[in-house]
Amino acid sequence: MIRHPLSGERSFFNQIQLHHTFSLEPRVREDLLRMVGEERMPRQVFFGDGSPIDSATMALLGRLYEDCAVRFEWQRGDVVMLDNLLAAHARDPYEGPRKIVVAMGDMHAPADLASHPHAMELQD
Image (cartoon, rainbow, N blue to C red; front, side, top):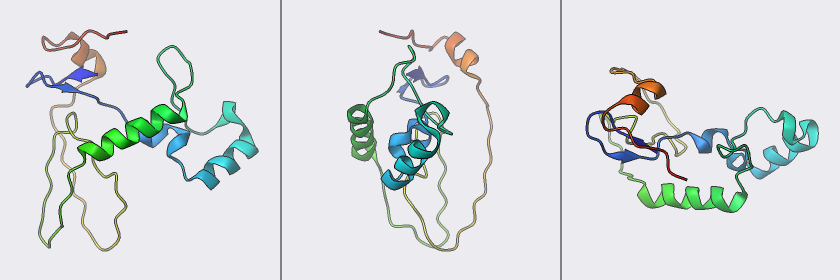
């Protein structure tokens, strides 16, 4: 959990679904595990103490993400702008032509967030 450096809003900021093997298609996950084993998986995520994050926890996080999802019917000319610290994005598959333009500003390193006046102490 972090606090946004401007608003102070609490945010569950992570990319766990990008890196945890639970998020892979089951067949891909099984094939990779069989080929390289758990220790050599190309991506994996653990709790801060190094213990594994179980499938039930990953399924719960997936449901929570889904409960918080905002979706709309895209129309030609639509533009989306978001604060990357407050909104997970690009979680649904997309087909069709599109133009992706990215602009970033006010980059914040984790250490900067931890020392910011709105920073939140880690809780057990």
